[in-house]
Image (cartoon, rainbow, N blue to C red; front, top):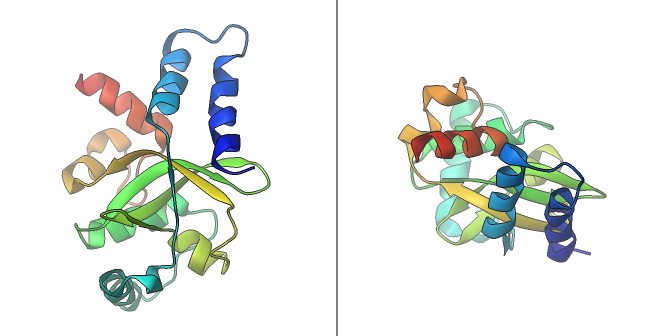
Amino acid sequence: MGADSLKNYVEGWLQLPGMDGRWRGYYTWQKESLEPVKIQSYKDHPEVKKIVTKFLRSKKRHPRIQECYGNAFKLSIFDERIGYVLGHALAFIPLAHAWNSYGDFHFDLTAELALADPGGFSAYVKICEINDTEVLMNPAFKSNVSGPDLGQFYTYIQEEQ
């Protein structure tokens, strides 16, 4: 299990009968982009710990369960040094998921604070990372509360090409 399971999950979609057009492009993009990443506690990086502590105090609320896109988005908007990462996480099933990065340091506030289980997901694969606040705030995503999911971001990059 682990990153290979997530890779197989994405590749499995491409094997479905009738998979063509936009959907084939979408899953091919994921397959070609996926990169296993190691998630660590935000407390393990001194600068990230400062940023997250300041964020939590300023918002007066902790990340919420089932709001990974919003949780990651809000932290990325709070401090432009924090990246917004989209990919998949493996729980008992693969899940589309969002988390954050600080350079090559990846951390997941949803798992660590909302679920209170930093080891709740056994593997992560990154599909893309957004480090540009203007892109995150793009009206194409139709939200100022949550960042884009994989489908929204794929549509956005296709339209930008």
